[in-house]
Amino acid sequence: MKAVAVLLAAALPLAAAQPPPPPSEAERLLFLHEHLANVGEPRVLRYRYVEDAQAQERVTDRATMTLRTGAGGRCCDVEGTYLSGRGAVQLPDIPQARANPVLLYFLEGEVRRLQRTTQGQAAHFRRRMRQALVDEATIADTPVRWGDRTVPGRTVRMAPFLNDPYRGRFPEQAATEYAFVLSDAVPGGVYSMEAALPGGAARRTLTLEDPQP
Image 1 (cartoon, one colour):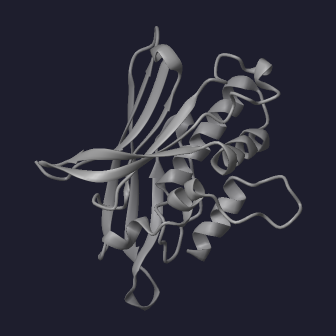
Image 2 (cartoon, helix red, strand yellow):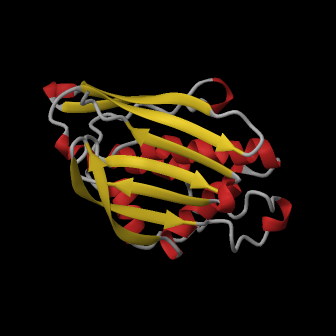
């Protein structure tokens, strides 16, 4: 848990110098919840990435979170492999992970995309995302179809740039809404992540692959 908190602080820092307030419910669900508690042994969690945009061919890719036995035989240390080419993200491995770091990979991938396509500052995009989780995120119960059954889940939504004072510098992407579907009934606790523009202009999803045939 501590390692994840340290990585989160590095990946999505807040600008404030004073001690941070207690985490919001959205922050707890994404970064402090023990998503990996339902994984009792080493395994690989596989996620399918799909990117759709108007006037462009669909892009597909993969991400994996490899859970390995850690010190003292405890499960698990996590090594992530996230996408390929210019969309690839590399972050430090996390020993004795409790939260699922795939969320950090997805968010960091979005930050780098924004930096690459808008020439804006990565630190600004990270701050806006983190602050949106504190101030603006909504949470709703969501049924999740997993295998041959429907299981309970929750969706965290945020649109971090709608009220960004600098949104005029990247108007085409400022309306991006992010959604994170979580469920303790699926391996690793994270079912899907999405970044989408209204009207279907662009949509990027990362979804846990069901290992059942």
